[in-house]
Length: 426
Image (cartoon, rainbow, N blue to C red; front, side, top):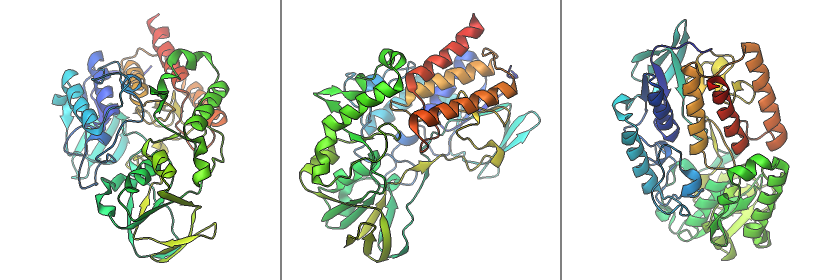
C-alpha cells in the first residue's frame, strides 16, 4: 500500500495536470500544481510567438466534443462538433475554477531537477527554488520535447518545428518543405498550401490517414466504449483501416505514399484540409531527405528542390529530462502505465497515447493515482508490479508495434483501472 500523508507535487497545469489536481482535491489529498508557464491550459494556452505551446491559430481538436469531454466537466456545445483552440483554452480556465484548484497552482515554476529523498521527492526550479513532496505526479503528456529530422549537409534556409507554427502568413510566396506526415504534418501542409508558392512533403515512413467525419458523423463515435471492450483489437484495427481507405484511400493517386505499417501501429494522422489540398494538386511528395546544400535539398528517391523554409513535423519526446536516469518512464517500467516500478512515489498521468481522445484516459489515470495515494488501491508486491508492467508493455508491443511505447487500448485500459479501485472498495 502507498504511504499516505503529506503534500503531493503535480507537474504541469495542462489538461492532465488539472484533472489530476481535481482527483486529489476530491480525495482530500493536499497538493501543489506546478506550471512552467504564466497560465494554465498546456497545449491549449496559445502564445503567438510559438515558444511555449504547440497550439497554432486555427487548431481544432481531432476528436469530437463527446469523445473528448472528461467526466469532470463537459465541453460546451453540440457533442458532434470539434472544439477549436480558443474554446479549449476557455474550457481549461473554467475547469480550474469549477474544481477549485486555482488556489494551489504555482505559475512560472519550471522544474529543472527532481531528486528522490528518504521521504519522497525534492523538486528544484530553474530559479533554484526547492519544494519537497511525499510523492510527485508528472502530468506533462508525451508531446513536450520537439524532435527534428537530421538533415545531412548544410541547409541555409529557415527551419522551425511544427510546435512553432502559428499561421500560414509567414510562408506567403515561399517554397516550403514539410518533413513528416502525421497529423501535424498533414495539417500544416494543408494550411500552408493556400499561401505558399509551393509545398512539398518529405515522407520517410508513410502513416495511415483519415478525416474527422464520415458521412457527416464524427468518426470517433464508431469506436465507442462498448464496442471497444467487446471486440478484440485485431477486429477494430480492420475497421479503422477501412475508414482510412474510405476517407483518404484515393489520395495515393495524387502522390501520397501508401502506408507501410499495419494500420494502428502508429497514431492515425487526422486532417480535413490536407485531403482537399492534395486533390487540388497543391502538394507534392518525396521520400526522406538525403542531403542539403544551401537551399537545395535532395531526397532519397532522387528528386530534389529548392526551399526557403523547412518545417519539421517530426514528433516529440516526453519532456522528462528533469528526472534522474533511473526514473525515466519507458515501455516496461510503469505499473498500469502510471506508477513507476523502479522509482518510489513517482506517478505519470497523461503520458499515454491511444486511438482516442486523451483527456478522458488521463482522467481515469488521475482517479487511479489519487486512489492509490489514498490507500484505496490494493497494490501488489514490488516484484509483481514489475512483472505486470513488463507484461503490459509486451502486450502493447504485440498489438501496436514498437514506435509508440505509451500507447494503450483505451476502453479496456480504463476498465482495468476501474476494476482496481472497485476491488479495494469491495
